[in-house]
Length: 449
Image (cartoon, helix red, strand yellow):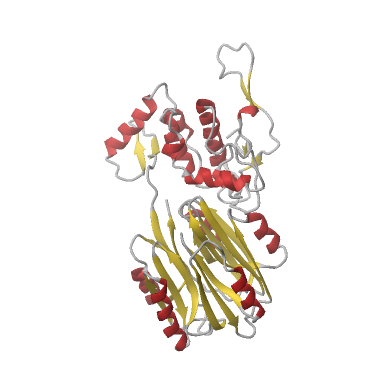
């Protein structure tokens, strides 16, 4: 934002000064305090931009004005300065922001959740409409994208002239999508991003190829029911034929299970259901004492579901730990990673303002590196960046507004992975994946835009 190669990194009102007595304040506007500034340019790379990076326990900036990406631990780029500037302008216009007043150890994540949950329209209520268009544009920018400063300046034209011009451009092209490249008579093209008023939810299906016949489940089945009792009856039938639950999902009023026939690490399994928001700690402790480990966990608004399994030799976890937290437990995860634990199951239970994350981490998991991409929409760019770096999605959990994608690198994973989103039931997409010799490894229902 500031130079050809640096981000300010800490945009806030206190870091702007205006020269006393200047007739035109814009001429005397200065920025100070570049202690958190970072470079976005890297001439050693083909793109000329620094590589994407993220660490869930990393944060840089001032909590009140930081971009959502900064809260989520992503490396900062030009888009983040512009988002922070939008929050500064809103604060100066309205006098306060909806996420002020949080305190305690979870303050950063609580503020992050409020920023990600609230729509642009609700956030900018009472402010000039240009702020909706500004934040809608900067929030959808990609990590390496060059900001269209000319478009942003056009939006800020005197009065509502910039907004009227943006709408005129949309009308000229008859745009039906939220994003359109539109051309002015001068030849300048703008990407107009209309503020969204609604959130969109879909089934998210992650399927992976097996590296070889020895690691393939050979046969996989999907069963879904509107009641837990019906699910149990079907799962017990599958257990009797040697199949074992690999993925459990209670979402969108459906109780779903994915079962594998062959080469599953699970030897003997138990499925436990708790129709309340208290995680079944005592039941898990007893299963641990019997030599079983948590191999799948899920939840919905009203209940928990947990699968514990004894594991076949050489595929057995050595140790296991879990946490149930009201916010995403970034710090706890990072501490366990440093002790050679990896996330092996993840889930969310409860309603919007009374949710609990459950993260299970195990020693002996077949991974050598792991990352988590947490976001409020489907993190397409982040997932593709991880795929390009040889990560595979190994866990997925969704709330009404957040999704957490666990991505891992290890020896046993396949050569191809597909992440499909669908508004209808997932069975048709699952069948398409099976036809392409891909096996479902994660399944959930959550917000995608």
